[in-house]
Length: 510
Picture 1 (cartoon, rainbow, N blue to C red):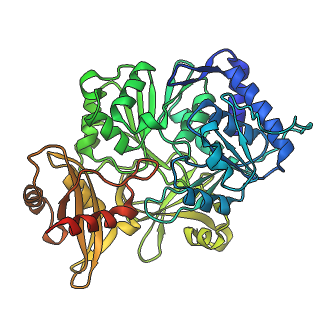
Picture 2: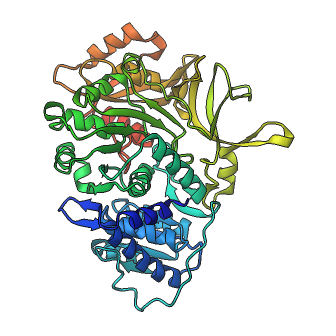
Picture 3: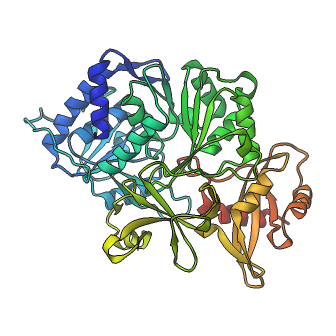
């Protein structure tokens, strides 16, 4: 079943139930949600040809969810565009995506109109008052699993943004699995924390609305403030939360969560970056009753491993990635080119199955580079190369080692930046850390660690001393204490900007 058809089916079962609730208390029922989506879909289908792309440049409001459902219903792949991205970046993506329409909010209308394509301003419940005319009769779009559902541009945490194409088959495979693995129901109130141009809300919106849950749309302006996020979760009685570790760590350390708790919150899922055991233990202490799961997978595949985090995992140096769900095939590509699908092994994670993207929009060369054909001539398997390295143990459990671009050579030795981050993150008084390597002709690369301290007594000398106790000499980084780390629009650490932050600190030093 296509993901938007799940929502229509649920609306037929519970038309009067609350589907969406906003910060100001506004509520939209399932029946009204689907009626609004159907009205907008008819307008879209009359204006654009099947397969035309639609950009959604909107705040996190009910109209944005209606726009997504309407685009899918009309057979038009949608592309969520972040309102707070620089206009130059927005124009670059518009030029790449070549959409037929831009759907936007009142307060973003000026910026959207400047992007070039025709622009519709949607009202609170999805009506386009400036569409210009009533729609002609449009037949319902017939979509198949191979047709595109939406396009998500990569976050830019490690490279240039690329439009990742997600087919209806990709999306349905993930949502079907997620509904079985992490079921939601009419009693759930799902906090939509991540921005809509990220892949995390795919679970919130389609698994949530497809199962009768009520979505609580956390506004972007609240999501960046931990205390505001905490109050939102508490006041709305949120039962399920899916967020990046950085946001969860801020919630524990900079809000009332640790002291007051969230008794209604029964499920916490995290993804997008590594969550180290020391801060994760603090989350577990603040939410002792909640199930916590580590989900792993790039945008190109969505989730391809999961792990229910237990007490034993919290005692490890790094939290394992877990195991793949049914239908996902994971192998490890070793340095010698061997693809090992079973047994103990170490190498780059490559993924095959219905979860894998068709490729990058308008970038066939990058798509070809990202894919790997393996197997015998009569049974070739198409794998996506994640760029992440892992170790598979004798029990089949995957353990994350780091990014392909996180592997550096220094003093003739291979060093994984993620391992250095894990050690420093485990130290008392360390709130957060990011490691970065810079070229050094004498030793190939010099490793630095940008550390956010959690107290006034933390010193460079103290952290360096502990690193000497825990790491080989060639892995001890140069420590810099910083007040903040650069972030992408999705809340992850902006790895591409770390060198600039390091350079600014070095210039400021006498």
